[in-house]
Length: 245
Length: 304
Image 1 (cartoon, each protein chain N blue to C red):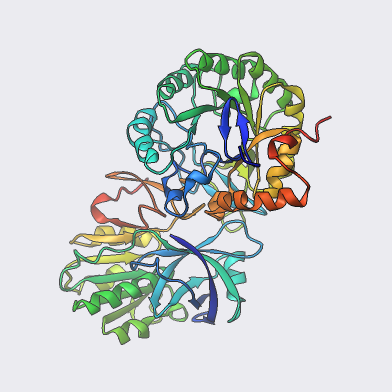
Image 2 (cartoon, helix red, strand yellow):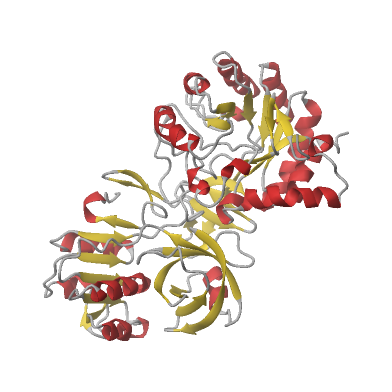
């Protein structure tokens, strides 16, 4: 973990509510895809945990959704402004069990962390399939980014206004895969858990206090004991997940 | 003996800064970012007789200048703390640590404290009486002077280490409770624990926190802490450890003027992992600014 100051290089809207921000600063603690950063915003007490979309040449890219007053304020920030950021948080995805043809399933704002993962898997020579799920056509983002990496990309929309009608699990039926990686809202993760016939890794979201394992605000129960989503996660292996209720 | 040193219940501390229980784990997460030996000491995660998962999530809500938590005393239980956490801690911390203890019955407190009494690295026992008393209708030990005194006496009977009773601010008369604890043998009083608070999500129209209510902490509660530390320090003859919304060297000085011998820093650690390090580094300059030679000289300086 590192606490340092980043300068905003760009901050642009991808959809009505989703923004992409590029930040320049010390990225040396960002060691793995699927990690997150925790951002301090003027006037807000708690930091905002946001997943790492990409990290290359000293530029950290995040893609975030405006869901409240904090992210609303972030969306208004301009290039040149500075942010206090904790980097290198969370375990990230483990690439080693991916096999030759992993599939990546992302839902909504769960899509961004899969980008850096996809890039790394393709660099290792894997044949990567990507399924991106959204509610409607005007919420779709990042499709071209994954295509440019050389992945086989499928887009689903719940209302059928773009791509395959339905959920990511509907597109999964026709794909031959060796392993899976996923990130998205909990109902989607549960559906992926049931629909997949291989092992895989899930990235979870939870309301956090600190983001680095101190406050126990984001604990969950797993097969292998209590885990902190922020420190022992956010990525958990399929075999260790215990769904509550 | 430096300018910052204080003596808390017979133990010399290099400075009065203590990360508060529940905001610093068992120390080693923070040892990854700075040498935690710069601290006066720290109060480790509230430890109970048996392991606890705590409350369901969400456990955290944001507030203006603060936060609410309802973690529910998640901890691995005293056996594991002694066998696993303390050995890890001894590798990165060479000072006496403050052991924070919670319980749900008088016997629980005594059991846990008796175990921790045998640990050399434990300097002080900080006993959190804000938990519900399962044999007393669920009312918090800390809201009843008699129950708080009963816990104090039970703990004192099993340890020779200094016992500091950590009080809840969610009471009508905190002075009466502090005095009962002193009469029952407490070596010190620490305050304030969190204020009971609640937030409601306007989108879902339901409480933000699964447990509905939780402990409100952060800079917003600092004036309440100053007031209560002042009241208690005026009424007892044992050292007071002040806490509640401390986030700067100036806040430390203010709480010491109110009567605190040492000062705990809580929620600030969660926002700025280096909060305590920065406060310690800033203290000499702040002391110069206000004409303070030695911190120990100002304890209770504002007292009546």
